[in-house]
Image (tube, rainbow, N blue to C red):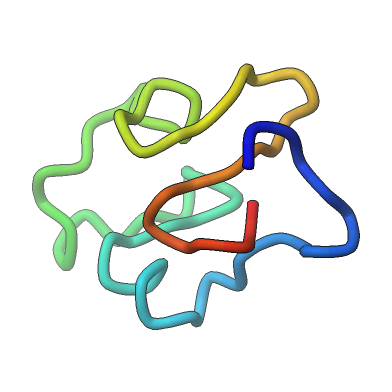
Length: 68
């Protein structure tokens, strides 16, 4: 999936795969104590698992198949 598909929807932050890597829609809420490797600037569009361009602001992710 290379383009965000509204029918498939966004991954919920509470979904196991997203929660395991600290996926947050608002990166200012990342818990640095729980995810000490997080650095400012990390986001979906510069991740190796991201599939597509960052326009629209959501696209496929190989970690959470069927979701954006």
